[in-house]
Image (tube, rainbow, N blue to C red; front, side, top):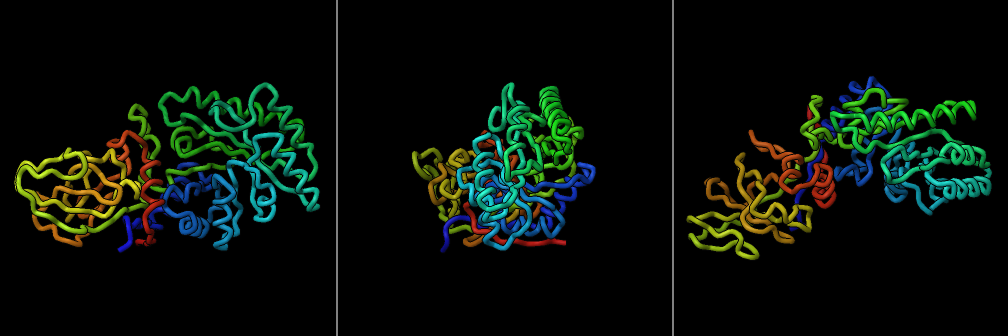
Length: 374
């Protein structure tokens, strides 16, 4: 048998969520973020669906991610959010680099001159994320210097919010104000309007002033709201459909007497005659050890608890109350079965993390299948 679980990706849910984004963002163009293998959903399959639904741009983190899309025949414009040293690849693969240093801009300029072409770029401004982007008191001068380099053309400007998911959006407003001030100043100097984008999923939901010329959602496309991380944010989220289901099967079932220890460290000891099921998924497959004696899975439409520590390759379940369960029954780790549902948000809460990590961890290590529903 193959190791790990199966990730069933519902492409109809992806399309539904895209339409929610469009409706919420007043039909702004959508730059669909498919980095990290589309948050574990599979960048190639998801990108094809998004492009079929009319998305004009894709965005990835690194050149290597873009190359995989190009190798699969995807020809749409791809924005690479984090520039790198492989300058030639931006030309060979017809990618749109996001530039956040004059050094990178100079390298692109040099390569463009060698090829006797012009490379369009987007320039990133750090307005308060503290991660990447032009920053400090020389931002305008730096952008002007980049704009004057031969062989490159600044097509877009962008930034990134650090906390648009809060009820108090004062810092997000400050970031937008900083961005807008720079954008206006540069546009006046070069007498050109730039394609500007800043709104991530949180800003799509909370901050319409940030929609600018396009929105750049990630987690919303996959069926989750970033607002769930901050319960104090009272803005209601629209109806999103989680696109990922993680499934496995019961490898075996063992009947054990009271007093039987289960898994490493004997952290679970049966208190009654028990039925212990074994599922072929473990922390090597993205199912965190933090779910040891803490998580639940679905078997025959019933929640059953994880028994003992999650192992590298296996996890045990207490099936004592799921009396009809048998070997090879479907086990749902994430998703819906009968009337019960386990969400990435629920798992994230148990593991003291966020839904993004749950999706990327489980989805990227599972074998994927794609479905479409009516």
